[in-house]
Length: 358
Length: 98
Image (cartoon, rainbow over all chains, first blue to last red; front, side, top):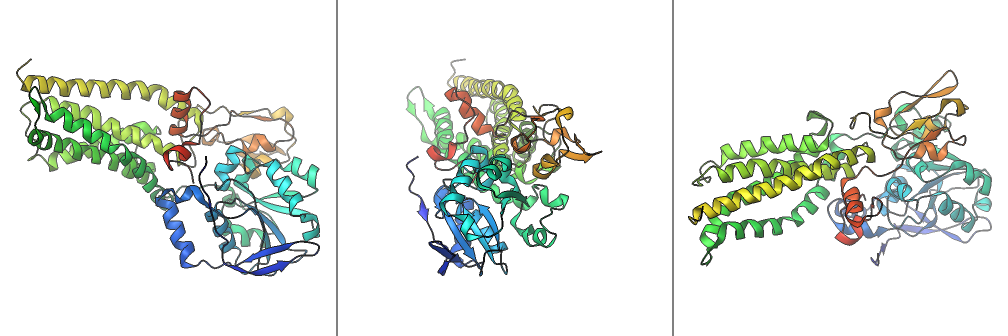
C-alpha cells in the first residue's frame, strides 16, 4: 500500500444542489483529451493503480428526484466509461471507494461491496436526493453486493444493470430489463489486444535477469569472462527469449480461441514451439554452435517459457476459474522447474565440453 | 470460450430453489437458465467461480468456492503460504487486474 492516488475531478461543470443535500459535483458526459490519454496510460502503465476519482455523489445532466441512480467504482476509467454512456440522460452517480480498482475486481475483493454501498447511501443521504427507491448496480458488482441486505438496511432495491455501460440506455428503455446478451461477459480479440501490454511489461521485467544468466553462461571461461563469446553465442538465446515473450504474452492471448486445447499452458506451449521452430528457420545463419546441445536446450526451454507466460494471462481473462488454474499449476510448475533445470544443465554440459573438460 | 472441463466447484441444490431468477440475472456466463419456474445449471464448465450467484441466492441453493482464476495470484499464495492473493500490483508496480 502507501501508493499516492491521483484524484481527478472530471470536468466539473459547477455544482448541483439537491434538496436537503450538500453540493454535488456535476460532470460532463464528454471525454476530454486528458481522459483519452489517461485511458491509454492505464492500459500500458502503472498509472492504472492510482487513477481515481473521489467517492461520493455526482450528477450527469440535470437529474431530479425521479432520476435513476447508478453505482460505480472510483477507478477513474470505470467512472469515465459510465458517464460517457449516460450521455443525454439525467442521472445520479454514486462512486464507491474501491481503492481505485474497477467494479469487477473490487467486487471480488469485497471493496465494491454491500457494506460500502450501504454506508455510502447513508452518507450522501440518498433518501433525500431521490423520491424513488431503486439503484442500478452494474451486474458484475453482484460478486460483492448482496441485494437483499442492501434493501433490508436502506430500503433501496438493487437492480443489477447490464454488464456493459453502453447497454444502459437500451436497458432503461426496456423498463429495467436486460436481454440475455446484456448479461454476458465477452472477450473478443480487441478486448484481448488491449490487455497484452500488461502481459508483455511484467514478462520483460524479468528479461534483464534472463539476459545476464545467458551472457554469463556463454561468456564465462576458466580464465575469466570472454565478452565476444558471451555476445556471439548468447545472442541467439536472447532473441529466443524475446520470441518466447512475444509468443506467450502477445500471440497466445490474441489468438486464444483459435489455438487448440483449453489449457492456457498447452496453448502457450504450442504457440511457443511454432515460434521457436519458425525463428530457427529464420536465423539459421546465426545458429553456429558446434554441437546439438544448445538446440536441444532451446527447444526444451523456450516453448515452456512461452507456456508459463501464457498461463499468466489467466489473470486477465473473463472466463478462467481458480479450480482450473490450480490444476494447470499443479501439473505445470513441476514441469517448468524440471525443464529449466534440465536445459540449464545441458548448456553447462555444452560449455564444459567446449572447455575440453568433458 | 470455455476453460478446463470438470473442475469447477459450483454446486446447485435444486430442492432449495424458489425460482426467483437472481442467479440467471447475475451470472456473466449464462451458466443458469430458468425452466419450469426453477433454475437449472445448463453449462457448468462456463462457471468462473466468481460467486455472484451464491452471494445473491437468498435460499442457500448455490455453493461455490470463490476465487480468482489468476496464475500470478495462485503462485503468490503458494509462495507466501496464504490464500491466493490478487494484490500483486501493489508491490510489483502493476501486474494486476485494473
